[in-house]
Amino acid sequence: MLIKVPVSWLREYVDIAVPIDELALKLHMASTEVKGVERPWWNDKIRVGRIEKLTKHPNADKLQLATVSYGAGQTKTVVTGATNLTEGAIVPYADEGAEVIDGHTGERTILKAAKMRGVQSEGMVLSAKELGLGEDHEGIQILDPRLPVGALLREVLGETILALELQPNRPDCLGVVGIARETSALLGTGLREPPLERLPEKTPRGLDVRIEDDVACPRFAAALLHDVRIGPSPGWMQARLVAAGMRPIDNVVDITNYVMLELGQPLHAYDHAMLRGGLLVARPARRGETLRTLDGVDRVLPDGTLVIADAERALGVAGILGGEDSEIRATTTTVALECASFEPRRIGKTAGLLGLHGSSGSAAARRFSWELSPDLVPMALARACRLLREHAGASVAGLVDRYPRPRPRINVRMRFSDVPRVLGIEVPPEETLDILRRLQFTAAADGDTLVATPPVVRTDIAIAEDIVEEVGRVAGYDRLPVRVPDGPLPLAERHPLEEFRERAR
Image 1 (cartoon, one colour):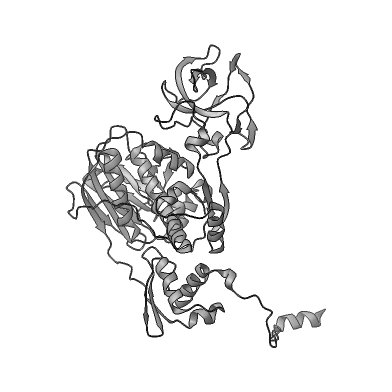
Image 2 (cartoon, rainbow, N blue to C red):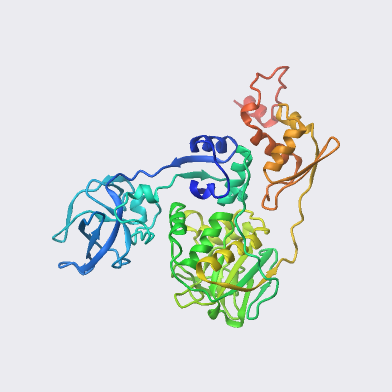
């Protein structure tokens, strides 16, 4: 899975004293494949603009004329078909000669003056796709209102991004904090954790949670939040979401996406007023049950599909896509915030049946199809509640957390001597312990035996060979000796079928 990690976000949790290209190489050599380091390429023709006036196009009902100021009292008239513009909005403005992404071909192109239905367009206001910040081409990218009009966009919004290709055995790296953990271990610097909300232990009135299939849904939790004020998320959060390839929507939805990108654990927010019976339940779909999902499609749910439902009807396909009936609205004041753990193979199968696999599937479904740790559930809820209090005025009424069969912690015991024996390099016990502790393992020596417990987010660690691999990749595979094998090579036994084919020829 390809993820994009803004370096400024990474620096929030770990100090990086080396050049970013050097960090990229270290990550790559330690088994986190780096596809590239992306840097802002916008030239001096792309600036922060302000929509001063909007008027109808004289010759086209679906177009409008935007008067854009872009510094030093200068204005230009731009023809646009975007419907999300308002007077006073802060937007990216591209003058003639700007290099932008063609929204149709996806290729970079130099902007030229053009007439649209008889009116000269003096430049463009840009979408996220035209800036190379995402795939959204439906509307103009609205910027933080605090940005100075006329500033070069690359100086106020430019972000260096690590493009990483992750493998399913490392779901702990699906979030910025996971990459920060790797960076901390590789650079030997401290790791800072994101601030979490201290959640009340009481069960809130008006919300309950149930699990009807604890194999498909091992853990299911929800928090109830009152006094929520729906509005735009802060500009810095929007900028990070866009840099990571997501479209800002509103503060509540943006916070759930922000936490997913930060910790790797998806969440879903419901308008509590739309929940019948004040209940959230993870259950199999009933025969012939239908659901209109957030993409506006009416879907007949395959038998056995795990759904999240209230007391009467399905609200969403568990771990894949929410439903329209309970989505957050501008009038929402009370939010039920759900966070759960799902069986990954079930998610993958259901996504395939619904045609929501691969790039067409939701960001949440792609993450849930990997083996996320159930211990991420309370962390993600606490992080989201903290941000909702700070940026939506929310107060947390309580939490319900169902976890009927907690996952046992893994303890691995092995001889220290197994590490150099398998790797073929000398790794002293002290170095082995240091590497594991930098990776947030609990590690101790019991004589000549190593006792190691992985952090709760590492669902990929189970046996001694896993521990050896961790030590080897952080110590550096470049330390492994390169030598020609010596001694006699064993002769491979020929398969009887191969001998028969030779005789037959």
